Image 1 (cartoon, rainbow, N blue to C red):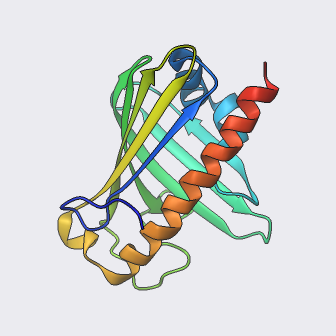
Image 2 (image 1 turned 135 degrees about the horizontal axis):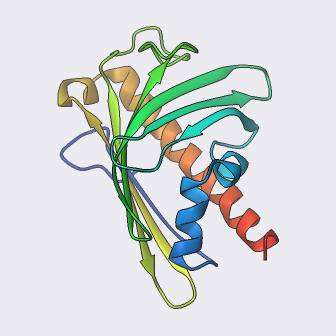
Image 3 (image 1 turned 180 degrees about the vertical axis):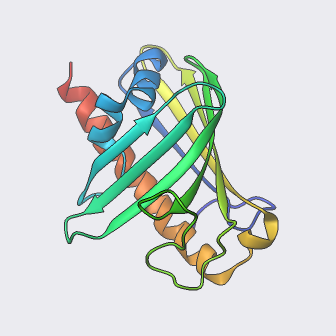
Length: 171
């Protein structure tokens, strides 16, 4: 069962990687690396715009092997290399307008995922802790959003598996 806080839709995932924090941080902030691992299994990323600076934009498209696409847009709030990233994400259509999650017609369009990623040095390795809360709190209580959060947690776990494999192969 995913870890939850007072925000019923919050998720947390922790994982250690065989890479120092500064290298892991680079794989989060440089599009040429990010596109190789972000997203669950059976996805690729045909669009990835990252401006890793406070106020900088994120614009992503995850495409599943069946052709289904999920568009996300957001803004970086904090970029503290190599220790921490904070950004907000929300679902959009291809043009960037707020949109429902493609699997849920009844979706709160104001739902935003406030994501904090902490990178900790644990001796030649990095411990990454991701925490994602939903804002506003009213949206966090929406039944479809709660169901999606379990899928999102699994997607993060799969993304981190991909990242771990790539970091080892990149040695």
